[in-house]
Image (cartoon, rainbow, N blue to C red; front, top):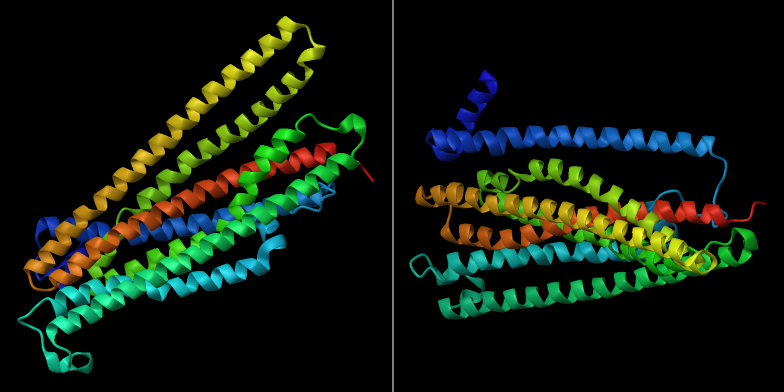
Length: 389
């Protein structure tokens, strides 16, 4: 602990030339605690991935029954099997967005520091020796072009990934329907309608985002953090100061949501079966079971709402705490003359895009977990109705 304390003091003096107690605490958090926590989380994640792969291999070797649709056991492998060529184009398009994103961050800083600051403006150093007003219009034109290119690329990618999702939805529905038609009449399930209409769509809708979202939003996060680090190392490190808290809290709530989603899927199938068989049962008994199923679905939905909104509220609170470090660290650097006002303003403006990208990544994680749960339930359904060979 003494060595960490000494390191924090040295870093404080390196970046700020002063060892104020409040700066010392912030440096401890953003340059010592945060990296160590992220390293621990990375090691834990790698261990879980390796352990899960070993368990899945053991289960595959012990369970010789394979779905006759030849569907992979994991949703990521299922998406790769049928859409990997199209995902390559998505990846290339996502990579094209990154330099344009950086341009939209850098140009506002250049406009404030170089075009609007009349005292430091030097016409001889500008492109084609433009006057201050012409140079301002030139930079604003570049900024407008970068915004248009960024918007156009995102529109193309969104449309293309939508077509990927719809194509996979159609394919999987046809596959399940064909399996249902080939199965024995006594094994045909009443659950076909909810599976083929309701459960297939969320699974395949994720396929369009499976590569695009991590590359676009993850790339946006990386680009913005790189931009902030180039302005000032301490300011860039402050951006990820609270990221470990999110990486710990979000998965805890997500595991609870996954369990509730799976339970709700099973209950929907039970309800569908009760409605189909209600005419064969006594009216009172059939209605009683249906009412019980309605009540269970109602309370499951309330539990889902409660868990999701608690997780969302905590995440929003953590995201809104980050500007505190901007105003504290960045404001101090501006006063000390170690950071330009334009760089601070550009960093504050870019943080909105950073916060949006991080939210999209956490939303992607939640969608991935939901799709995994639904895909696992669908695999179990197809195995239950297939005809043995």
